[in-house]
Image 1: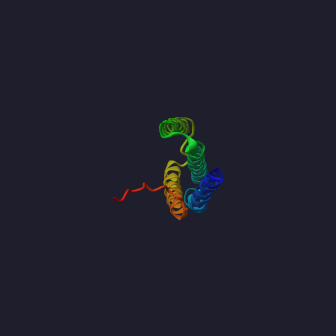
Image 2: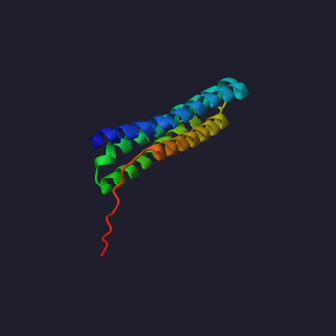
Image 3: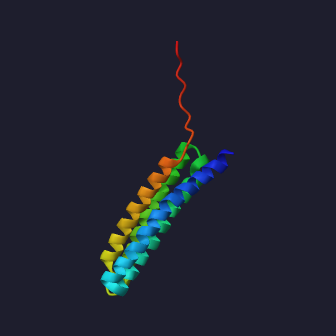
Amino acid sequence: MSNLSAASSEEKMWRGALVPALVVTVISIVISIAVKKGPGAWGSLLASMTVLIFFSVHLGISAISKNLDPIATMALAMFSYFAKVMVMGAFLLIVTKFTSPATINRPAFAITALAITAAWLAGEIRAFMKLKLGLPLPLRRIE
């Protein structure tokens, strides 16, 4: 029974984060198209896909590691963060070296990525605060 509620809480957090992130994604893409036309659209789309995939992977790893012991969970989390930073660095290096600014607008990419990240985190925090988690409290002996 607890696995079912834990899975649904992960799903609620994912949906709670995804909805505001998608709203900001659409707004960012529309603004980027209006301001920078094609290159702005590509930069904004690329940032949107990157942020949404990276944060979804994070919640997926969180769901997988919920039943592991704390040391394994910490190791998995640290590996996940390190791998995401390395992959993101390689991805940004590839985009910088192999695409021209006329194809992908860098400021549109950066602004979109930051805006979606802020919306995702705000939505995830809001969804977490709405969860009714039963946390075990330590018993205090009264003598």
